[in-house]
Image (cartoon, rainbow, N blue to C red; front, side, top):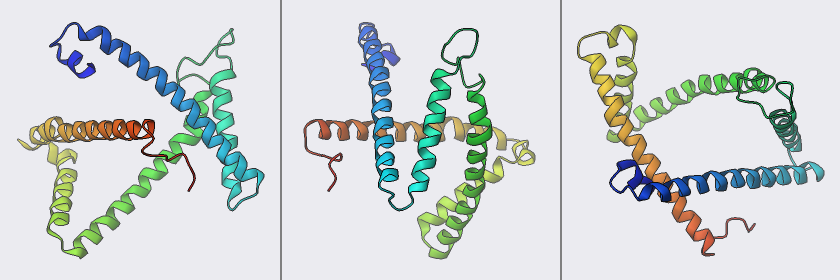
Length: 198
């Protein structure tokens, strides 16, 4: 119904689609709370029993409590209310001092992992791997500012990004959504029991 509502083919689907989207928001919020409690409980047990690498669990729990308390209990204005956005202090401090440096470090490491993957692909002499490497290098070179200003190059890269890459991303999104639905139905029917430790 949500997809039909986007096409506008069935005006009656608007109410059902709105209801489903609202349900999805509520279920997502509840799933976030349940997941948060599950992760916290697991790491509390790890710290209490002093299992291997329990110090990492302690750091996770401290960070978890700090972010939740900051996001929920720190007043922004004169009233005791939730922060309006991540631009509000002191929530912004966590993102600028912790999250952004970690994200930049991970992206910097990604370049080395990508280079290692390229070298392994070239070493394997596999035709499919070589095609992927060549296309990736062409896309990277085409995005350089001097190359992008050449005639037909900039528009071609933009066309690839707007149509080919976007179609692939939407296909991946739809496929992952269908996979999540199938996995959820299997859990609800009792065919899968991933929550039971084996």
